[in-house]
Amino acid sequence: MHFSKKCSVFKVVLSALLIVALLQLIYLSFLSKLHGRQQRYRYSELFGGAGKRNAHLPEKNTRKERLKYSLSTGGIFDGSGQYRVYKNLIKSEFSTNQKPGADAGAHQIALATHTTINNLHHLDSLLERWQYPLSVAIFAHGQDVKFATALVYALSMFCPQIQALVDFHLVCHSGEMANFPEQDREQFAGLEDCGGVFAKLETHRDKYQNYAIGGNVSYPNNLLRNVARGGTDTAYILVIDIDMVPSADLPRQFQALLKRREPASDEVFVLPAFEIRHARKMPASKSELVQLYQVGEVRPFYEELCPRCQAPTNFSRWVNLHGQTSGELEVAYTLTWVDPWEPFYIGPRTVPLYDESFRQYGFNRISQACELHVAGYRFSVLSSAFVVHRGFKVAGEFHKRKDEENRRNRMLFRSFKEGLKSKYPASPRRC
Image (tube, rainbow, N blue to C red):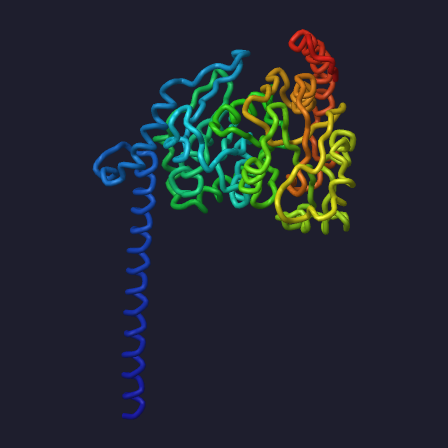
């Protein structure tokens, strides 16, 4: 009798456990279906038509329609006719609300940068440091044209800071065209938030080694720099590569400097350039950077590959400036350009454009610095601002055709310098 009661209790407990397990399965099934519906809704919100589901999202629909219009224009060809440019493919709220020709107000400075889709993930860390207007020119080829279009659109939808501050421009080969990605449900249905979009970008990380995009595709770095520069309306522009990060609070400090000191029309402001070991945290201030510099964790940019390319900055002088590791940003000293200096600088939007004949590796930035020199510009080094490249540049990390491209661009640089004599006949300066 006692055994029979125990057996009955056991059966009741077992039945209860089975019922609980069954309810959990039903609940999990419901959650899965709900998640699937949410993903389909997210996809419809991003890439679907402007039907009833999207009627309560007028702002997002407007952004979508603006993108569709930009794509419908077919872009414009560059001067060589080899590249198609979609300028202002995605416009930020800052640019959208800025009236043509109006003063940028609180924002007198913007950052312009360029990349392929495999390095666009660096935008996340760049925005942590630069919370001001930012213009990004992206080069895409083949299937990456569609991927880039979809991902920058998703970034502008799901990332509030990107929505507010970042303008995107797209460059591809003239024979390729970008289209609105309405039929890519499988690839993009899972995009739900800003983190998810950057996670998607991570899947394309390091797809190419430097400029080795594949086939005979040439990376038009100077065209991209000009497109990014032209996408800003601010009085001053900092042009850097997307895997570089400026010192903290630079825009505010620089604008405060402009209020205290009237800049000359022929003056650019140099940011000493460094590179840091991959494992190290990016320094925010000059004092943090100097500490890492003194123990060899930070070194001048390109120190191993081309020490002469940055040496004119005079790093020892800059590091040892007394009383200028903190406080107000000032001009520490002014230099005249010497070959082969490739400074990173903040300049007025009136500085000469980059020569778009230079593509791939070699002489693309030095050619523009050389022209600034011949045009009469002076290079004022800022006291406590800087830029840092993530990772040490070493010879073994470059693509196989680097030396061949460098030789080609060296020949091009010689003819470029000859052309400057005709462009600036009254200038006594040469490079």
